[in-house]
Length: 176
Image (tube, rainbow, N blue to C red; front, side, top):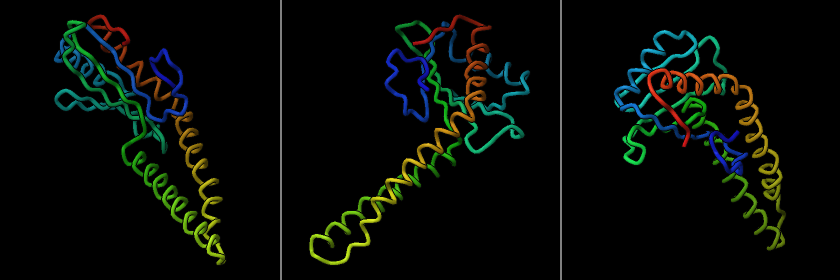
């Protein structure tokens, strides 16, 4: 689900990124977001220096509920602020999926190599089953993450819309 990209070749993207620019200062952007999430019950937010994190309420969360991470930078070319956004699951969920990918990938690679070596030496090679295991489990992990992303799509769009409209109320905003 590519956000804000003219090149839609990132169809496998799990954690979409996009950029916005505004004529507001960093402080004005933070104030606009803080005022908005204090009024809006559908968004939980926290702001730390030049970063902001937005979530959906706990009662609406599931395993892949998105978290929108926003960072602000001074951008001289646009004479304003560059807003970098990253939408993805909670860091604990992301870490868990990465652990699964790495663990299954390593088992598949090294187990399959060991099985192939045993086969070439003329010994029984039950470790060749690791390739079948990896060939089934890795796509399963990927498609479960895509299913979770699709399940959290409406929440993700709500968070992105929230940031866009909160800043747009105070100043001009455009996509980069």
